[in-house]
Length: 159
Image (spheres, rainbow, N blue to C red):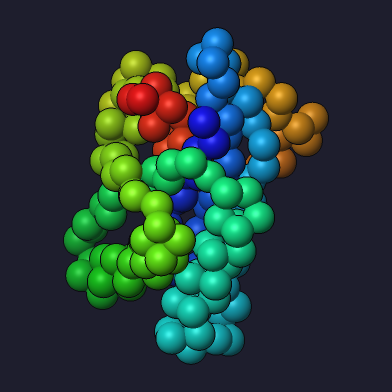
């Protein structure tokens, strides 16, 4: 089963494709980040996120898609932008006739590390132990793409 994990953001949206095979081994396929331009307007950024998600889905044909739920913070303007960026990815997935499985940040951390309040470093250490076939340059992966790996890994464990 191919899983697309998405960690939404207006500036950086992380994504990862993992494969869970019949032996329950979880293998790395690909990952990256949709990076919007600071010079683009809000609508252009949302369009870029949407189109980039469509491209990844078309290139990899994931069976299932998992996405991190929005963490609402103290700044309502930031939360609104994050929700809209997430919606751009969400609509791309739905238009590709796939269902979105959603996970809370603490649930993702708990499923991957056993601790719902784990640090990004703790999550990354577990990702390296669990996922087979990570590229040698995995130390240079961005937080956004490793967060997306954690989302996909959480979903693989939930299935």
